[in-house]
Length: 159
Image 1 (cartoon, rainbow, N blue to C red):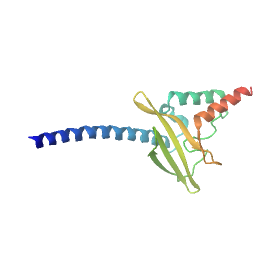
Image 2 (cartoon, rainbow, N blue to C red):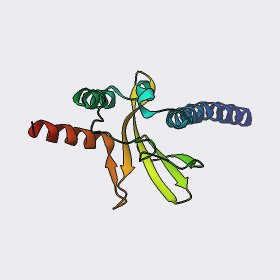
Image 3 (cartoon, rainbow, N blue to C red):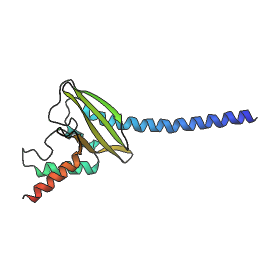
Image 4 (cartoon, rainbow, N blue to C red):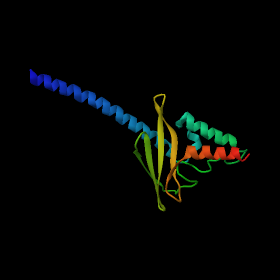
């Protein structure tokens, strides 16, 4: 009887543990899939506003509104590639980072760079709340959202 009870308890614990692992794997897959969706060929970062948090989307809209007709605002490059152009045969590796981040390594013949996506939960889904690109000269990561906000503030000061 004790053996049977032991096996029943083990089976229940095993089944409940796999539900937890399954939910965790599903959340991990959702985060990676969200970021991978940005890297579909021939798409522009601005086409993905529904993947962004309200906060990040608001900053981008402020930037667009501050630019004159036909002008480029503070964000004058594509943050998902960390530049204006990327090599034709870029290779991307996606991995989960710490605290709801996805780390993308973009590799081209001339070198590699790391792009980090900060995610937040919104209505049960993950949204991109910021992107951290690398400064080409120092290699340090910087917040795209803060870069835009700083630029907008400087523009207001010089008006």
